[in-house]
Structures are given as structure tokens and as C-alpha cells.
Image 1 (cartoon, helix red, strand yellow):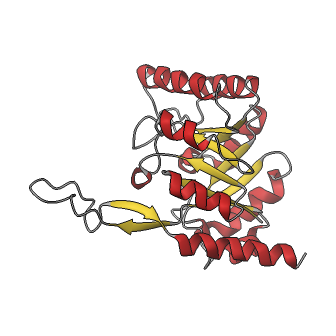
Image 2 (cartoon, helix red, strand yellow; image 1 turned 60 degrees about the vertical axis):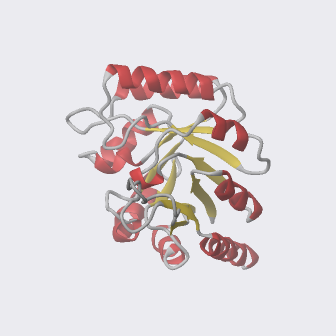
Length: 246
């Protein structure tokens, strides 16, 4: 089993490193599905050792059909990140017909590989019309890794599809399973799909007493996502036990 923690702060990244996760995916705004993080956070986390560091490039919430101005901003972010001590870039581009934007994806992949980093296509793949054809296209474009929930809201709902994709294409592109992955279902996913890489967020709803006084900045019943230390430790313990039983 390999584990990735999706993080938006230093605490989450340090806990992932301490608990021997294989990688982190650095974001901001996880309540929006993850957006491009600040350059300050990226630079700080790039100092971490013994853990793979991947960074999200996503300029706004919503879907993945971007204007030319949005794409130029993403390219600018990419060029700056390519100069930093990180390992991979996470991104995704779709066309209005819900197919892969091949031209933009190829440009990103080429620039990422020129910088010696991994090209990781995120869950935009889960909103494509033809899932299997999309995977084939990403393989042809030399994308290194995809993050997917098998086109379901939660990965646990797509075990059969994920197992099929792993069997057909897992030797050609690295498949990482994410969305609702936790200590309660990761062994089931591992046994059912034979995918070995899992992406979890380990979020916990947290409060900040200054969020709703005269002006309300809360997110409903909570204010921001903190780090669920128990979930991180539980995932790490499951991985440790599996490795000990090999």
C-alpha cells in the first residue's frame, strides 16, 4: 500500500511525513475540491525530506473548462513551480464536449517532464464522458499518474470499475484512488481493486471563534478544515501492518 495525504497547511504535511506517507498533494481550499496553493506554502513544504511533494494547479472552483486567461495563469504558475524542489504537478483540462483537452494537456506534460517532474492528471477524469478512452489518451500523452474515484462520488462505489481499469492499464499508467478513502474502507478497496496507491484528505471540521461575529465567514456548521491526526495515524498503522505481513 502507498499513501498520499491531501494537505492545505504545514501541519498536515508534517504529520504525513512523520507517519511515513509516500506523498502529499499540496492545495488550498480543500472545501472547494482543492485549488492552487500559495507560493509561500509550496516553498515551505518543498523543504520536507523523505516524502514526495506534488502540487495542485487549479485556478478556481467548479469544473475544468478554462478560458484562455485562466490557462495563461496556470502556465505562469507551472513555470514558477517547475523551478522549485517538488516532485509532481497535479492538473486537468477538459473540452466543452467533456473530452480531454489534448493540446493543453500535452503542453503541460511536456513542460513538467522537461523539469524532471511527474505529470499527474486529477479527478477531472471522473467527469469525462468516455472513461476508458480518456485513460488511453492520457497514456498516449505520457501522463505519469491519474487520481480517480472511478467516476463516482466515492471510490468505494466504483470498486468494479477501478479493478477493471487497474487490470487493463495499471502497468501503463499509475492509478491513484481517492474520494472518501479512509481507515474504514481502504483494505476493502485494496482487496477489491488491486490498486496500491490511495489518496486521503484526513480533514476534520474546525471552528474559529472570530468567524461569525458581525460578519459571517463560516462554512455553515464549521469554519475551516483542520487535520484529523487520528485518521492519519490509523491509515499509517494499516500500511505498517500490511508491510509487516508481506
